[in-house]
Length: 95
Image 1 (spheres, helix red, strand yellow):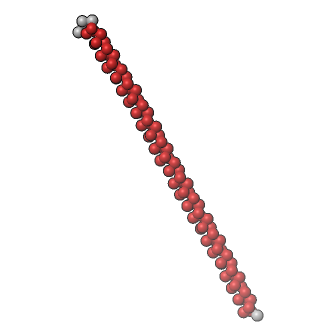
Image 2 (cartoon, helix red, strand yellow; image 1 turned 45 degrees about the horizontal axis):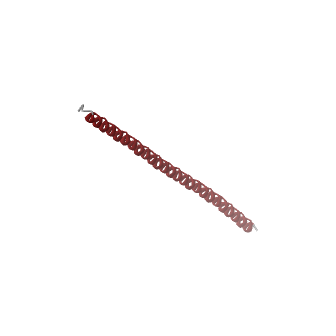
Image 3 (cartoon, one colour; image 1 turned 135 degrees about the vertical axis):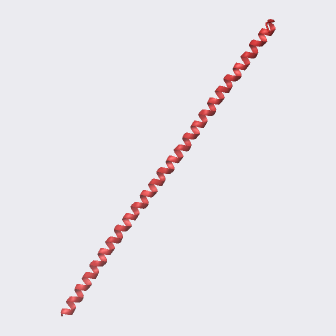
C-alpha cells in the first residue's frame, strides 16, 4: 500500500515537473518570437530609411540638373545678347 502511494507521489511530481518544463519552453519560444519580430521590424525600418534616402538623393540630383539647365540657358542668352549688341555696334560703325 505504502509503495503504491509513493509511486503515485513520484508520478505526480514527474507530471508537475514536465508541466513546468513545458511552460518554461513555451515562455522561451514566445521570447524568441518577440526577438525575431523586433529584428524584422528593425530591418523594415532600416530598409524604408535607405529607400527614403535614395529618393531624396534622386530629388536633389534632379533639382541640381534643373538648376544647371537654367544657368546654362541664362549664359547662352547673355552670349546671344552680347553678340547682337556687338553686331549692332559694328553696323553703326562703333567697333
